[in-house]
Image 1 (cartoon, rainbow, N blue to C red):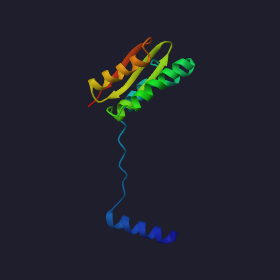
Image 2: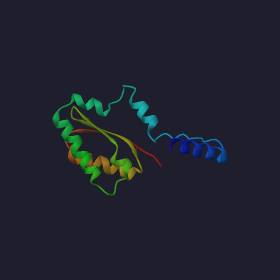
Image 3: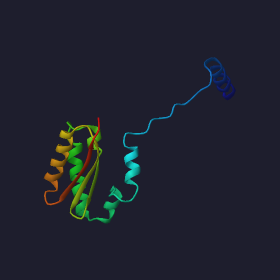
Image 4: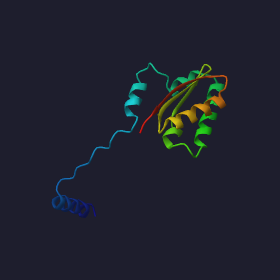
Length: 123
């Protein structure tokens, strides 16, 4: 059976030329992820030094975003980092209106916290 598969593969390569595998294009935010890894910006890993209350705020904001069927997948997948009475929202969204909606949701959940809006509108 292995010989048959090998022979078939060789015949197909002979008929259609060499096989080339196109590179998968980078995800939309690959450059952003590299920037975030530089160490001078908060990342979700930084939240591990926070309190359980910080984690709960992040969980509640995420639940509100995921539960909103009017938000894009990008908006639902933004980074939410809660640390020391401050919530940072970072990532690509589809429109300024979507960004404003996310900030409003974060303020409703974390009304006593500072909200850092680092959302970026991409088209």
